Amino acid sequence: MLNTEPNLAAPDDFYEALLAIHQDLTPEQARIVDARLILLLSNHIGDMAVLRQAMERARQGITPAGQDATITIRA
Amino acid sequence: MHIDYQSLRFEYRRSPDQSAAQLAHHPVVVVGAGPVGLATAIDLAQSGLRVLLLDDDRCLSNGSRAICFAKRTLEIFDRLGCGDRMVEKGVTWNLGRVFHRDDPVYSFNLLPEGGHRRPAFINLQQYYVEGFLLDRAGALPEIEIRWNNKVAALGPREDGVELTVETPEGEYRILAEYVVAADGARSPIRKAMGLESKGRSFRDRFLIADVRMKADFPAERWFWFDPPFHPNQSVLLHSQPDNIWRIDFQLGWDADPEEERKPERVIPRVRALLGKDAAFELEWVSVYTFSCLRMARFRHGRVIFAGDAAHGVSPFGARGANSGIQDAENIAWKLALVLRGEAPETLLDSYDSERVAAADENILNSTRSTDFITPKNESSRAFRDAVLDLAKDCAFARRLVNSGRLSLPSTYCGSPLNTLDADRFEGLMVPGAPALDAPLRDGDWLLRRLGGGFTLLHFGAASPVMPESETALRVVNITPEDDAEGLAATRYDARPGTTYLIRPDQHVCARWRRFDPEAVRAALRRATGRG
Ligand SMILES: Cc1cc2nc3c(=O)[nH]c(=O)nc-3n(C[C@H](O)[C@H](O)[C@H](O)COP(=O)(O)OP(=O)(O)OC[C@H]3O[C@@H](n4cnc5c(N)ncnc54)[C@H](O)[C@@H]3O)c2cc1C
Image: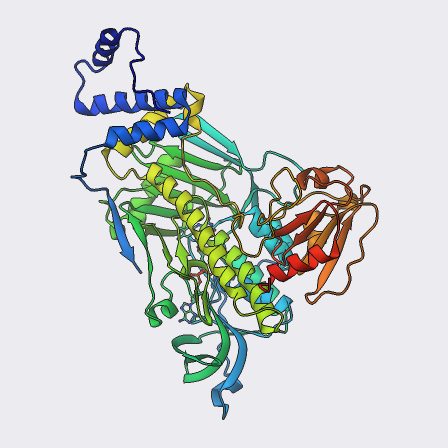
C-alpha cells in the first residue's frame, strides 16, 4: 500500500536536497539525474504493488501530447 | 564431407498430379520448405503420415538470417533425428556478456547447471539447419518435396482445401485435407485468404554483417551499448561455424539502407571493431528494420499458420525460428491424431490457443528488449542510459539491462489439454511445462527415453502395467538405478510411484503420486481433445 501520509522527518530539508541535485542542470541533465533517482528508489522500495500505485498517481491528469517512435503495421 | 548448402539448387520435377484426370488427394500439404515447414513435414512423417511439401523456390535460405538455436529446439531436432549433426556442426555457447562503452556491465549464463544433454544454444547458419532437416526429410519415404511449386490460390471445400499450384510448366490443382502454411513472414497464403498479421515496427535500422575471419573472441554472445568503435549505438557479436562472425550494428532510423549496405561503408565499421589491420572478408550484408506482430488466430478451418507466417519478432532473443519449430511440433502430433481419426478435429483449436499464448510471450520479451535497445522516446532513452550507468556499481541495475532475453519454450499453463494437479508437487514440471532433460545410467538421457508419442513416465522399482487404451501409450519406467545421479527425481519432484503423462511434443499434461490406470485414461482423453 502506497503511503501518502507524511513520512519525511524534515520535509523542507528533503525538498532542498532534491532541488540541490538539479542545480544548474540543463533539462537533459536533469532528466538523467531523475531517471537514476527513480531507479534507485524503486529498487529500494521493491514492492511492485506500491510502485504501480505510485506510477499511477504520478501519471494522473496528464493527457499524452507526444508520440512514441513506433509504427503500427499490418502485413 | 563439406556441402555448401547455400549454393545447392534442387530440381523441379513434373508430378503425376499435374496430368491426373481427377484432383489428386493429399492428407496434409505443408507450404514452405523453411525451417518450420521442414520440421513440420518430418514430424508428421515420423508418425506415419504421407506429407506433400511445396516450395516456390529451389534453394535453401541464404545470407544472414537465423543463427542462434536454443536448447529446446535442439531437443526437438533430437526427436526429429537430426540433433547430433546440428550440435556437431554448430558453435556451442552458454554465456552472454554485455558491455557499456569499454566496461563489462553484466553477464549471464543461460545454462548454469549440469546434467543436460544439450547446451543453452548453438550458433549455426540457417542454411545448415535447413540443409540438415532436408537431409533428414530425404530419408523419410512419406515425404515428397516439390521445388518450384508455388501455391497461388486456395479455395476451401467441405472435404478439404483446393490448392492452385504454379510451376514452370503451368498451373495444376490438388486437394488437401489440411494445409500447414509455413510460407514465411510475407505469407502469400495469409494474403490470399484476406487475413493479416498486426503489430508494431521499431524506428531503427540494423546492419547485419557476416564476416569471414580468424579471430580469437570466445564462443560467447557479446553485446555493446555505446562502444567507442560505434558510438551512441549498439553492436552484437556472435561466432558461427566456418570462421564466420555475425556482427549487428545498430544504425538508427535516419540511416540510408541502400548506402549502408555498400562495402565501402561496411568495411570501416568492421575495422573499427576488429582493429585497422584485421584481415577479413564480407560474406553477406543486409540492413533490416524489425517488427513484432502476429495474426489474431493461427487456425482458420483446415488451414493452419505456423512460424513467421503466423507471428514475427525482432531477433534480439532469437525467438523467431526457435518458436516456429515449437509451432511445428505442436501442430504435427495433433494433425496426425485427427487425420488418423483418433482425435476430434477440435483438438486443432488447442494449437491455436497454446501457440497464440506462446507468440504473445515471445512478442512481449522481444518488444521489451527492443524498447531497451531502441528507446522509443526521450524518457525511455534517459532510463536506459541511467540503467547502464548504475550497472557499473549497483547490482540491481544489471538485472534491468536488456540486450535480449533469449528464447525459452513456453509452458502451456492454461491449456485445455492439461489435467489439473490433484496431488502436491514442487518444482517446474507443472502440467503444460516442456519436460526437462536429465542424465540416466550408461550415458542415456531422459528426453531420449521419452521419444515421441504419448508416454507414461513412471518412477519406481518396477514398471506399471497399463491396460490397453484408445490412444497408443508407451510406458517408460525410471528405476533408482537408472537415475544414477538422482537428477531426474529432483527435477520431476519424484518419489516411488510418481507418474507423469507426457504428450508427443514432450510437454507434461498430467501427473500423480501413484499410478492409477483410470486417471491416466481420463487424462489421455483430455489431452487428445476428447475429455
Ligand atoms: C537478421 C535475422 C536474424 C535472425 N536470427 C534468428 C536467430 O538467431 N534465431 C531464431 O530463432 N530466429 C532468427 N531469425 C528469424 C528466422 O530467420 C525466422 O523466424 C525463420 O526463418 C522462420 O522460418 P519459417 O519456416 O517460418 O519461414 P521462412 O524461413 O521464411 O520460410 C518460408 C518458405 O516458404 C516459401 N514460400 C513462400 N511463399 C510460398 C508459396 N506461395 N508457395 C510455396 N512456398 C512458398 C519460401 O520460399 C520459403 O522457403 C532471424 C531473422 C533475421 C532476419
